[in-house]
Amino acid sequence: MTSRLFPLFADLRNRTVLVVGGGGVARRKVAALLDTGARIVVGASQLDRELEALAAKDRIETITGDFVDAWLDDAWLVIAATDDAATNHAIAAAAESRRIFANVVDDAELSSIHLPARVERGPLQIAISSGGGAPMLARHIREQLEIQFDESLGALAELLQRSRARIRAKLEDLPARRRFFDRVLAGPIPALLRRGDTISAERALQANIDSASPLLGRVALVGAGPGDPGLLTLRALRLLNEADVILHDRLVSDDVLALARRDAELIEVGKHVGGDHHATQSAIHRLLVEHAKSGKRVVRLKGGDPFVFGRGGEELEALQLHGIDFEVVPGITAAVACGAYAGIPLTHREHAQSVRFVTAHTKGDDDIDWQALAQDRQTLAFYMGVSGLERIRDRLVAHGRSANTPIALVENGTRAGQRVVIGTLAELPELARVHGVAAPAILFVGEVSALATRLHWFGAAPLQGLPASARDAALARAA
Ligand code: SAH
Image 1: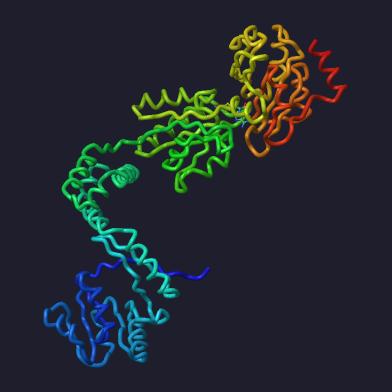
Image 2: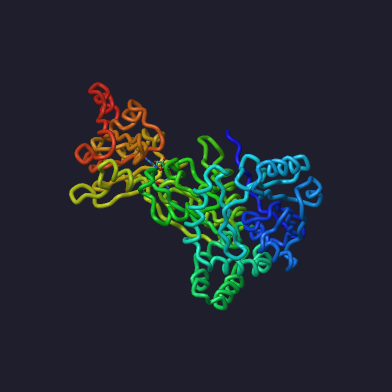
């Protein structure tokens, strides 16, 4: 890698800066130094009239004669602005041996420090450097910035400078201050200053400071949808762009995470198979509370919708217990998204008048009303079902649902690798096994599942049924 210049802003107050040269170039450098508070010493055999005038007004001190090393005795910085290359060389060499930074006008090679092109707005300065390689480009960019940033930016910088101590006293931690400034800069204050109404701007800022709370950390419980980032809501996207911290499940797709603010802290809090869910859940509660209490904007990002088998309710209760502000952003839940992307309408005038979202992940049978689930003319969407398929089939058939009821398994719905497997309830477990269906997958039971053969539009065509021999065996077993 090539080395690059390191930008610095120097405090030159009461520090000696030596400018060697008495002509127009030296004069321009002196002019740039005048408001820094530096002690400016100009050394030259002859000074032009303007420099003489500055000396007469005690704005600069002068030394007359040819450069000698001793001129550098008090200097922190030297600018070689003579029209004699040999003298400029000698100055650079002398400065180098004394470890004094030197700028040699129009000679980037000899310079140990470069003077940038500048845009100044009150206390705010924008410095531009091309590393000496393309000064015209730096100048061009400066001109563009001059147009882009009007003079009121200086007033804004001054206003914020005047209020700095008050703001810091009110908001001690950095994320809270960052949020405060985001709000102030997006509000009416810049426009007030552009109109020259400093008094109103000052008042508005004070009102902002008065109402600012140091504990403004809040949590947004956000549904990330099933995986395709196009299915995020606009609000989810905005919150991802603003978040300081994002706690996400493993289910949330990389494509969605890629939309998060670049310097947001991403924390995966997925539950691992066989892990202690209770411990994981309380660890999540702890993390949410800690980050929010430190004033951060926290996004708790969950696959699908946060209130559909997402334990979102429990997390909100934990936040409420600690008095932490929250909001909830719904997401497209897996049943809805997978139905859409597999060509399975969840309800249908001819086949299904209702749809039920069911979790197959329960401790015992007591939790599930199989009698109700076995009713005809409804669609069942089983979440987290991949491992309990045998039980689902057996219970539904035992409670009267036909073994011939169409089913569909949608794996990785809406994502690049989406697979849809369709068949009948009788052959369900074998189907999953033969096709190696893995999580995340959702199971649809009901006549509408068969429509995927005709209505599929996304990804590969559905895989259908079992080989004939396996089917007969499956039917016999279910009977
Ligand atoms: N809150 C989530 C569900 C969490 S439970 C939602 O509203 O979608 C996790 C289960 O959701 C998975 O086991 C699977 O059954 C289902 N699921 C989530 N995303 C899925 C996807 N992209 N494709 C298929 N099933 C998915």
